[in-house]
Image 1 (cartoon, rainbow over the protein chains, first blue to last red):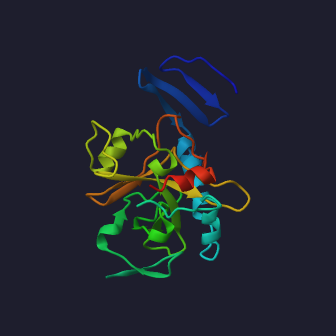
Image 2: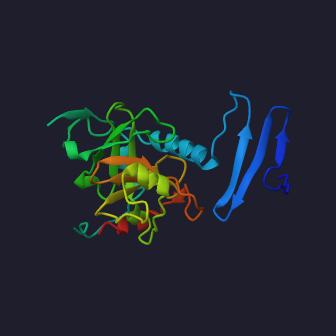
Image 3: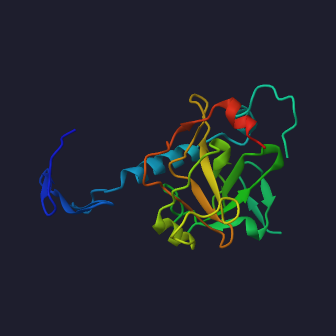
Amino acid sequence: MLVLRRRAGESVLIGDEIEVELLAISHQGAKIGIRAPKETVVLRKELKITQDQNTRAASGPSAQDLEQAIQKLRPNSRTDPPAR
Amino acid sequence: MPAVETKYFGSLSYAEDSVFHFPHGVPGFEQEKAFVLIESPEKAPLVFLQSMTRASLCFVAFPILVVDQSYQLAIAPEDLDELGLDTGRQPALGAEVMVLALISLHDQIPPSANLMAPVVLNLQSRRGLQAIRRDTRYSHQHTLAPEAAGEKTC
């Protein structure tokens, strides 16, 4: 990873069309501004991770396979009835 | 009672108060604005979030404390505001909100729970959203050990 030190008000250029400006720094974090072509998708990384994880979660077992899949979450032998 | 087409339970009657409105959907499914919470005794402690508009979309979830009994909420003020909750403090689990970890269940990989972005349901306003944590304390792929998940049903 390329690491650069920037002060508030300074920018970094990525290629010809993308500019990332460090707007302000506070104890809560750094505020950055991004100038990029409309078609460039800019996402907070955790949002992208959540989208991907939701897509994975949504493509879980079919109705027929549900019971078997749930078994993976349970101990193999259960002697006591589940507590209320 | 009205009924909804579900992925796992066929056509299912539901109570109005088990429907939660997600004004922004959830990431990846922004068009899905309403989910019905299905709690089936035989499947407990698992619960299901069934889309009201897409029968094929149903998330499998655990109440977050089933996955980690010492889980610490850290819902961002913007998300609390969106849910209509007090932004100055974390809400009370069980009383004000229900918090769910979405589960990934697949053949080849161990089951995992998303503790980084739990689904928060406001039990009073019936509004919901997926609250992505701003910190890195919990994983989006927390591996579920079979023994552990099954033992904590009480």
